[in-house]
Image 1: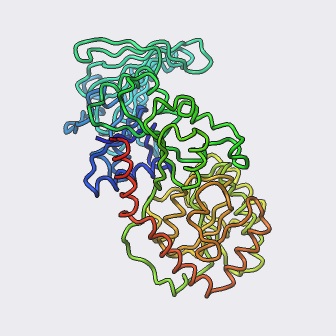
Image 2: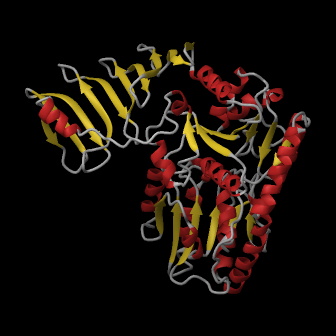
Image 3: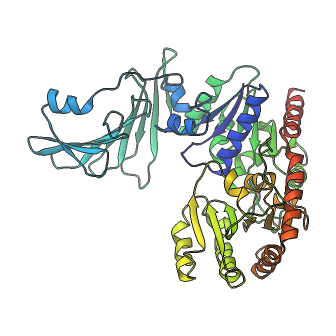
Length: 500
């Protein structure tokens, strides 16, 4: 079995999670057994996994210990009936929500949040003491069972958590220091695991124990969210093979690849190379740079995080109708430098009657970016589209894809754009764009952070319809270098090297 390790899976995908899901689907279509594993407790994990079509092939470390990997709850308790009739409590419904307040003799004792308007599927339940202070919260798994109970101090700091099986047995207990400024675990107890109780000092120890008990001969682990998933392997038996997957540049200073320190999230790998069976990167150049850095002490594999699929492609000789549409697929975060794109549109607005920038993503920078849009009076030109799982139709209706990051790994979004006949204009940064964009053929590489050159390049491209058609055809042709067949060959090579 091949296990792909990430920290969590939400209802919106980061590039790492999308890459892992792509890999799973590639393996599945080629009949290579694999599962995705998350290390964080997440009561909505299985609801989210259904969105992306992987619900039967993903589980968390907590599912493993809570004996909840393969369950389906058919009977859901009627909580409203229970509180009103059996407990004789008073229910007050909160308008415009799925939440209720529960009172006993006029005193609020419970606040309950439901997933649905029928009040059947509980999300969480808060309990209050006689002074109205929250003292306990029960969290329910999206599959219907009580999964975690969190006990709080009067200042609402977590002091103890219990994790339960679907049958209601407490399997994990986590204790916290109530006086610490931030949550700090002081003890983890695993109850009745194979007829024994175990104690751990921290989550890394628990995770290492999980890895060792999951592993069987022939299994292979891929550490994707490296900062979270790799350190526990330093505590495991070295017979367990693990490969570190690097999804971004490995150095802090991208302008000095050879002289810069490695990023902190990769320290556990580069400081303990003998514990890892190999490293995977997405580009040829990064493979060469890392081989020089580690003196080829372990194998380094160049395997793209994405691949092209057979799909219905647009007529590349017909440009999209309507306003000129610039497309960006990136998190709303500082390293993506989306403010460069917004300022670009402010300039292009003077050259084109109708022009729009569509920003597909999510992140902490959204408010800051929205303020910039308002300052530049671009509310009609810049659209914050949020996270959309399938952007195929959006790509077919766009004129060009933009990348203004200060660094990238492979850029899965760039490959998807090109494979859909959408040319790209990007800053020339380490590592991915220069391997996917053939300058002046399917896009342009612009000197990093040169906003004036970016403007001139985009303006020239948009003013030349015949050039756009030529680039759209070339984009599809170049993307075929990353077909499923070509990428799976690289994976089979990795398996052969690791086995030998």
